[in-house]
Amino acid sequence: MTAPKKLFIKTYGCQMNVYDSERMAEALGGQGYVETKQAEDADMILLNTCHIREKAAEKVYSELGRLKPLKELNPDLKIGVAGCVAQAEGEEIMRRQPAVDLVVGPQSYHRLPEMETRVRKGETALDTDFPEEDKFEHLKSRPKAKRAPAAFLTVQEGCDKFCAFCVVPYTRGAEVSRPASRVLQEARDLVERGVREVTLLGQNVNAYHGAGDTGDMTLAQLIRALAKVDGLERIRYTTSHPNDMDDDLIAAHGEVPELMPYLHLPVQSGSDRILKRMNRSHTADSYLRLLERIRAARPDIILSGDFIVGFPEETDADFEATMDLVREVKYGYAYSFKYSTRPGTPAAERALVDADVADARLQRLQALITGHQREIQNSMVGRDVSVLIERAGREAGQMLGKSEYLHSVHIDDCTAQIGDIVNVRIVDAKTNSLTARAV
Image (tube, rainbow, N blue to C red; front, side, top):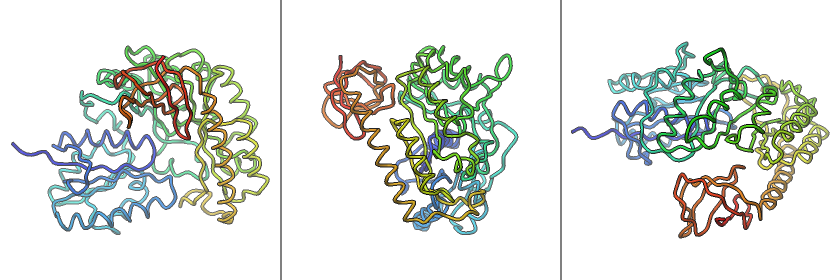
């Protein structure tokens, strides 16, 4: 009997890349691969890359340089680069690093099995097309092996917004939504394997417009349909654009119990001048009024956001406008970054803010956000929440899971099993987690 080949995947970046890596592993499973946690043991190494962070391509080339000695020791080892850096760099990856055998973009990874066959014959394989066929239609059905109780589920890819700082429209392509029937079937399959919670993924997920039985469905309609799937107890979605938060989706936050009271809604800046330069098409005031409507529908919702500090031409006044917006919203979570240039984007041609100024602004913003986050964490003490148990904790008898508000919760002296949803009372708040006891 032939021993299985071993596959090592290193995943960079967003939740969608985590989902994509799972699907790539499943696609190569049909070629006789099983996953390994050690690159040194692998017959194939895949780097599933992200182009969002600073110097993303150079970090990939550095990683490939570190992998080169493994190939020298094992000439049969195959190395591949997938994801958004693969899409952006294409043939350049193979030119700069001849140890690479295949390069595949995020819209073409359903073709991995045939590409693997070619590289096993000694060829190289490159596919960075935006194929017309639906990659999900061509992927093998997901295996029925037991799954963790929370899973990602991609429903939409690509973006048509063309924010001035963002490479997604160029690496992921135009907005495409999966048919609702396929999303629902994948959700049912996940539930059969033990999943209790799904997070719906999309670069612009609330622009979802997948085909349904009587025409295109909105994200709100999809959520309402998913809420009827037996055994699916929790639904989340990310990432959203303020301009695509329609009335039905806002209403769903108050009407669908399975939709968790957490929303990630990036604003990027509190300055209308900078928002316009970013091509964001909303204003600080329209964003704040939108949050008022969302909180009216679900008063206990916890909000999360994204911020870019030091965007080209940002003045002290622009930055203070961002600080004012953060003070008004009080995010439970927020992600903030110093602007870095993405080649090929409109903002790449603009004059940069002084690096020291941008660093100082980022530190001030992060301190403010951290204070609000801690304030909200402290306010949870004494409250009863429900927790989906995901794994055992570090201490004996301790279990760890996520509350409906996405807080990590450690439960002491817990007899619940992984996959259970338990009611607990919060007794302590730490920097990044809560401690609870069963009630």
